[in-house]
Length: 127
Image (cartoon, rainbow, N blue to C red):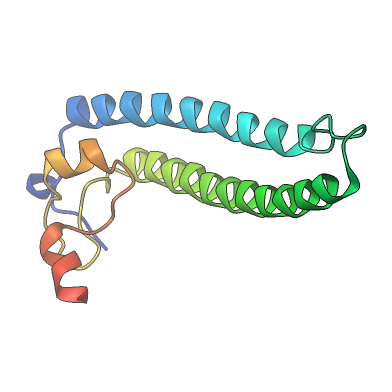
């Protein structure tokens, strides 16, 4: 898809988005590390000397916690991948162009959802 230069963000605007996205990637990677370390540290919650019934309850809770952490980690990894793809679109100067309508995605939307590839108009058409 060839992008009309009048229908894209300026290099200055793209540089601003790049800074925003880079910061979000760093924070997201930090959060992912926290999720992973919580997952790794879930093995021992200090219940070794408590009643067996409590231990069984604790193990069930631990399994749910691990599943929740695993889901969180998967979502976080997808978010990071989407942000990195947005950086590629910035390099290609296609960032901020709706992949359905070809129109610019509103700046306000991109600031809230910097990895967006659809305008609100296109998103509403999907419903």
